[in-house]
Image (cartoon, rainbow, N blue to C red):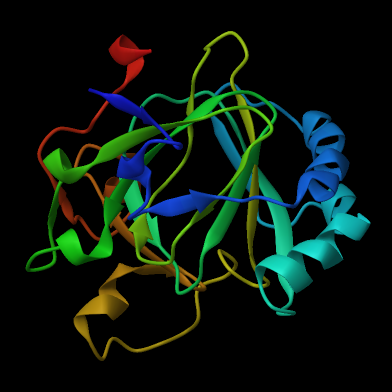
Length: 212
């Protein structure tokens, strides 16, 4: 699978490289570096050492227009797609090491299903912050170096990816909801699918291990 750079024009429909936030990035990286590194993949929606930084207010003001935000992390080792999710808002990512994001577009979902042949891979250099647009389907990062794994900031509106609201299904999209502000399509081979997540990916469960 071809892995594009986030500086390649191919990235433009999915997100952007954030500029002008170097002081914020400099605050976040050393704290993120001290967060845990699981053997698999771990996720914490809100991480107190990050949330307590002055950088958290800067993210709120400059990236979310003053909305309440949460700074968490997704860390570990991974080379597979497994699922794709989306939110109603952009997500901001920043890694202590190079990492890879697997993306598709919400508009490419057809009749409740997305073919994984639509997925593209993007290489994000260490220390570079990227915005993933709200209409960009994404999931856990992939490591660029298995020996180092990945430690990636996950900045989102406060409350995202916390407990799923207690709702009755009224429309097709409600079937995709697995947490607050989180709609997910799972590949049938995954533990998420076996645990009841909506199976909405068809085709290969992409693994970039051979492409790194």
